[in-house]
Image (spheres, rainbow, N blue to C red):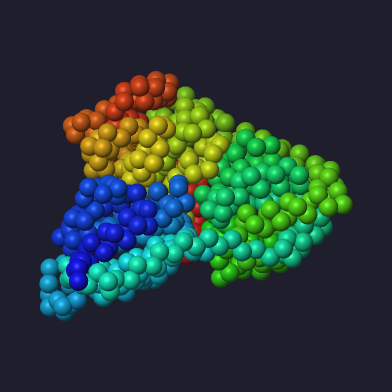
Length: 564
C-alpha cells in the first residue's frame, strides 16, 4: 500500500479546499508543508514578520469575505502572531492560522522553540484545533477552515506538530472530508415586528455594521432605505455597504466623525443595529436616548443585549431579514406611508450633518505650517476619489483623523485596525490590498509611531513590486498618548511619548523605494500625483502639527477606567 506523509496530507487539504495564497514566514516546523506546496497552485506570500503575515491574512479575509490563511513556525513564530490574532477576533475577521509546533514525542524535553501553544491562543480565537494523528490532518483542516466563516466570522487556530507532519501513514487510512457550509438563517415573524416598530417610531435610524458586509446585504439595504425613508449610518466593515453618497446614508456612525452622527443617534427614538455591536463607539449604549427603542439583529445570539436592554433582539442573518422586511414594505402601501412620515426627520438629519461638518471645515482647509493632520487626511481623501481607490489607516490620532474624513463609496475599500486599536496594521493591510487588487490604487495614511512596528514590510512591498503609496503623518511622537497625558496630567511625559524627527523617506529610498518629504500643505497633492505616477513603492514623509489634539485623544483622557 502507498504511504503518504502528514506534510503532504496538509498541503493537499489546502489545495483541495481551493486556497490560493498563504501569508507566511518560513520555519523548520512547517517545512514539511512548504515542500509539498512548492510548485502548486497555492502561492506562498512571505513577509518579514509573523505578525505581518497574520495582518495580511486578516485584510484578505475582510476584503474578500473568504478565510485568509496564515502559516507560521513554532514557538516565537507562534507568539509573534498573537496581537494580530486578537485584532482579528475583535474585528470578526475570517482567518485561519496554521502553526507548527514541537513534536509530540518531544513535549517537556526542552526541545527547540518549545512552548505550550494552544492554551495561550484558545481565548483569542473561535476555536483552537490540535491534530495529533496524521491520518486526521485533512479532517482537522476541514473543521478549522469552515469554522472561520460559520456564523459570525473570526480567527481559528490549527496546530500541527512537526513529527505528525513528518510521519508516514497508509494513504487509504487518510480521512478527507471537505464540507462547504452556507447558512443564512432568519425569522420572517421577526421582520413583521421590525416593521411594526418602525411604523410606530418618529425618528428611526439604522446602523449597519460588519454583519451587513459579510452577509452581502448592500442591495437589500439600499432598497429598504429608499422605500422606507429610514436614514442609515454605517460602521466598521459596514462602511460603504451604503455609499456615503447614497441619499439616505449619513456616513459613519462614530459620534466623533464630523456630520450628523452624534446628534442623530442622540435624538433617535428607534435605533436598528444591523450586525454591529454596542461598544465604546456608542459610549456603551449611552449615546442613545434612555427611552429610545432598540432593535438589534446579529448572527451571534450571545451578542444581543450587550451593554443595553434590547427591545427586539433578532438572531438573524442581515441580508435575509432585510430582504423579508423589504417585501413587507410593499403591503398596504406601508413603504409609501413611511416615506412621507420620516421626511421631516431626514431633513433634520441633513441639518445636523451640515452643522457637524461646518465645525471641521476650518481644520480641513487649514493653510498654516506645520500641516494640520486633518488637512492631510482631507488631501488624501480628495485625491483618492475614485470608487475603487483603497485607503488604509494606521496609528492613534492618524487613524482617527482619517476615519473622521474618509468618504467611502464602496464596501471593503477602507481598512483600519478597528476597536482593538492595534498599531502596525498599515503596511501589511496595504500590501494585502495591493495583492488582492493589483490594478487599484492603494494609499496608506499612518502615524510616525505606528510606522515603526512593521517597517520592513516596505521591503516586502518593494521585493514584490507592489506599488503602494504610504503617507506618514509625522508629528514627532506618540501623539494620542502625548495629548491625553497633557489633558489629564497637565503635561506630556517626554520619555515614552517623544520620538523626534526621523527621515523615514530616506530609509525607504535606501532599500529601493521612492522617498518624498513634505512640509507645506499645498505640496501634498503634487506629492501624491508624483508618487502614483512613479510606479514604485513610495514613502511620503509629511511633517504635521504636533500640538493638534484629536477627539480620540480627548476620549482616551476621559475614559472612566483611566481616571485617578
